[in-house]
Image (cartoon, rainbow, N blue to C red; front, side, top):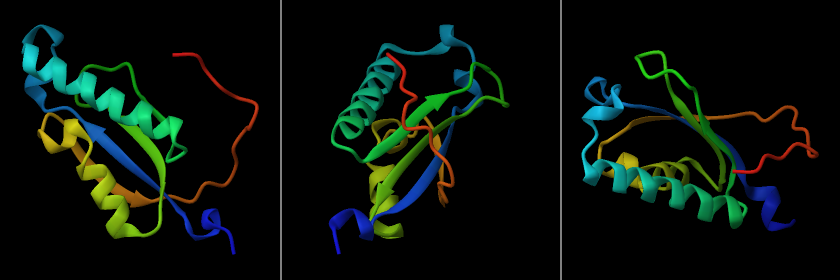
Length: 112
């Protein structure tokens, strides 16, 4: 059995605290941490761990981000989520769920 057979799919939902809905309220430190958050996800896209990451355009309580990724088990998935710099620094809250990937268009890719 190959390594990929033992991996499960997970998703975590990210939300900003209310005080950060307005981009003008962001400190330089918070901007730096979110930049590290993006780099963390990009590195893990490149290594094949993250399948997809993105966010909605809303800048209020309805807005959220998602990360769909692979892990061996829930413990590893929680560790991956908690190592996200934005989660670690509590700039974003995160909620983890096992995720059943039913369909995926292999031809779809976007430039960042």
